[in-house]
Length: 153
Image 1 (cartoon, helix red, strand yellow):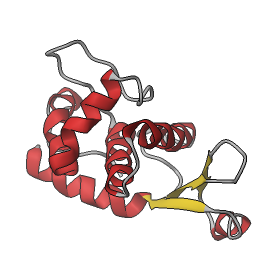
Image 2 (tube, rainbow, N blue to C red; image 1 turned 120 degrees about the vertical axis):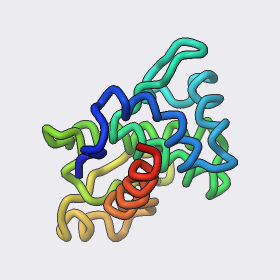
Image 3 (cartoon, rainbow, N blue to C red; image 1 turned 60 degrees about the horizontal axis):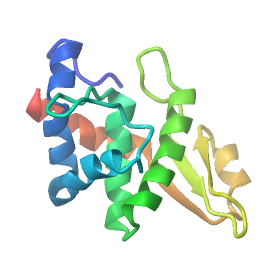
């Protein structure tokens, strides 16, 4: 799914802060705080007062970050897990910048560092069925993001 065909890419990047606010609601300010505090190193950098250039996967990452915050995770942990998910999506990206996978799973194995895995098939889901996971349906998140982008752009 492409971000939108209504405006050129530069226009899409210019409305990134509006999109983050629309997706995050009252939690949106915590996105920029987490970046400034170094908790979201996978997010694009910007200069103070400048626009943050967000690509499609960055926007999905912001939505995942907000979901982690809504679950009650602190920004440091939410940022760590979000960057795991964003890394998987970037490694699986199609030429148009959208992920090939339809879910991201954060694997929380006791005594081990959390890891992320892209889910592209039913077999992938079966392989993690006995793991402790947090999953995100990228199709559903993408559909919500598309609605926000269509309103903003």
